[in-house]
Image 1 (cartoon, rainbow, N blue to C red):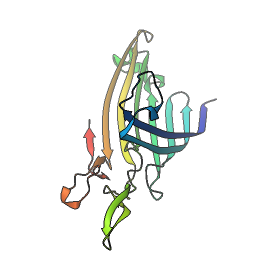
Image 2: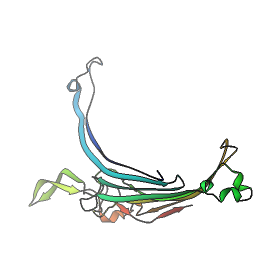
Image 3: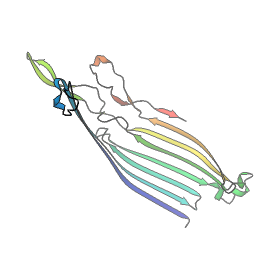
Image 4: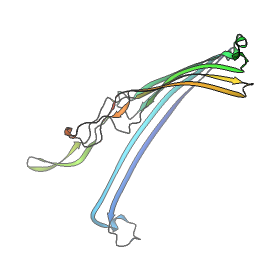
Length: 231
């Protein structure tokens, strides 16, 4: 028929679990011994860590064509990341494009010079994608355990926050737009394409320098600051 419609929907999920365990001793009496407790107890060290992240996405994409001459595509997706606070973990992003196959129009052959082309198509698109490349736990306060301090004249074990954080972190938005044309000559044996691109980044995720006088020795907090434009 004259109308063609297609659609696709999907769900994706990603989960990353990272665990580490390390131990150190030196002064082994025999290099063939592989057991950690065969080394000297003096200067021993050990440590470990555990990190988890998840990304769940749902998406919908549809296309429409009328007489293979007028083309349209639209898509929307919802991404939810554990790297943001519960209030900001989900973002909705969309994209769309339009195309016009001018060479399918009746008047095309009457256009001087251009009418000899096998294909001439005009198109344009714009869309936004989210970026969550900030590492895990950037919105939560890191706490160091077993930090001794004096209280009531005695040494007491405690905890201390080691870095400043920003609980209002949200998705960085990367918008890309373009307009262009496709030209086919000699029964499409020769193809010529022209493009103009524009990229804009908003809510840019960057680390915020803070003075050491605040008392934090850990990494600088992350925030949504600034924007970038590339064309």
